[in-house]
Image 1: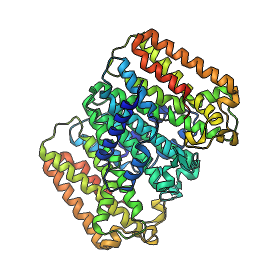
Image 2: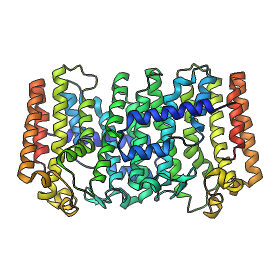
Image 3: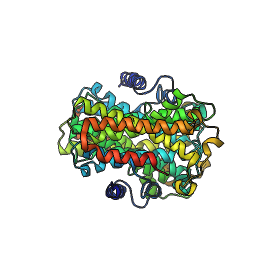
Image 4: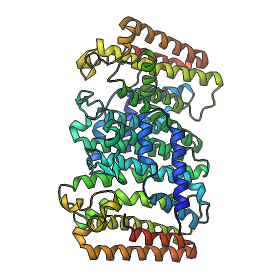
Length: 290
Length: 290
């Protein structure tokens, strides 16, 4: 499985969006390009493209939708890194946006990414009008105060007090999970799926979203700083409740394995061999070292 | 002209949106309700409703669109008041959002308002699908990095150096003007206007948006603190370039008067007596003391 073609395409599309939606000479533009481009593993875009392909679609028609998801994800990282939030100086091995451009510009860069993320969808000519409206509903719900923002709020609240398993689950299902599940919802837009296929996709993405977070928690204990581009051990240092602190290292790995297997079984049963790429990709997500 | 019926209706609608789009027990919900409800003159909503009526529509069908505009406006005030931006402790006679709820919650409340503002439009059943897509395009453009955010960026840049007339104009046409012009665009959605009527609406809203800012600058010199709910003289204290510093008080008043007259002439010629309410409202905007 080679994801390079997807990643190259999304990088190119995001750069084109920056040219289209920003004034060239602005400092907000520079801050957005700095944080948005050539950044990260593009997991959300890859999941979206693979879902579209599994549904029998040309993944290239989903480039704008995937760009929108990556922009919203990027905004959430910029705002999350701000001093009043997680106060993180580094992101992906380089200074975080507010460290490089100042707080005010970083705040505006995040705000701008929300606007152009949605503008990208409103202007997406690759999908039907119905799909465009459905996409806007799905993305605003996933990013909003009953989605990701609620997760961020809970996360802040439980920085200062221990979370139990139910709360930890709720935090991650909102903070990370909703935006990952969104990739499933968007990837099957304009497809006519059976109820079994819809249920399988929902289960797959619910599980994969949580596994992603469990692996993050494991890497904060076992990971390599150079590979991760950020310090390890920060959770323990901050007395933060994580899957590792609540379940232990071995049990966390087992949960991640079991949930991945359950996710894969669901889509194999519903989509047959068309699910091959996604299944290979979940192995990568489970075993990633960064 | 009585705007009470519009204002009561928009307050009720915004409260209903808070019930619909937020988890009840969240601190972000409380912060949003604190900043969004029973707040301000609802100038944008009133302009939007009056435009819809001038176009022969039932203004009640535009309640959701007006709610979205008020939410986006409210987000911009919350983020603008943050310490890294204007660092304002007071807003409309009470502590600003971050003073009442802390910076992190205020940041998330602003982010949440963007999301639900756009979600409100994506789910607006009062307008056609085409109008929904057009509304989404218009609002994301107006609020984004080629609209309001660019104005905020310029405004920050010119806090520390003097702006000339051209720059001042550009700041205000983006920072305040785009979101006010948006009310004209949204108010005539689903209407079939002649080219003359479209041009008249554009000119009207371009002028009214700038007049709004000129009157703000005048009130910062001549206004009454108790009525305004904020200190006067802050522009002079901060050596900020304003219409009053660049044109003088009397000339600023003359410009505001002339631009209002030009705006009114345009819509009288294009819409006849249906423009009566908007014209009365511009007199209120010109002579407001808060």
